[in-house]
Image 1 (spheres, helix red, strand yellow):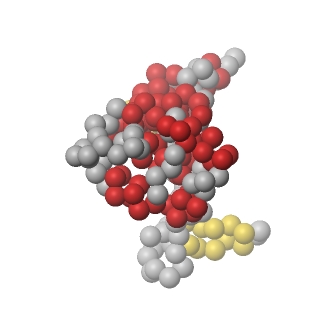
Image 2 (cartoon, helix red, strand yellow):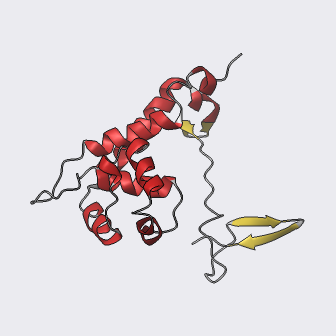
Length: 169
């Protein structure tokens, strides 16, 4: 018997999910008074590509602007027009103009696709007054932790047989 994800894999794949993000970002109204040569939707799509490809910073992503492979991937995978990446300062300034509700649209679309597929049934959670919620495991400890900030222990980092408490900012 196929799982919900296998059954609905037509919709639950990287290409479809990236296209959902691209469509949502294409539909954001351009608030800039003067139109520039880079289409407005390319700014959030480039930022999404940066995060999806796990670049550490805008500056690192910016350093790849002239790389033909990077430009090809941006154009073909993320539907960034002509594969042109805005500079880090330009991207930052334009992305600041985007309303938070417009950034939330891709998440809502993802959630809708995943919910319709039935893949969320395994994460349904009820406890006491909490009824019909989804329990989603999220782990950012590998990227966002500090040994300098004093807070209660939030997680354990396992290295070999040693378990070290780490703190999360």
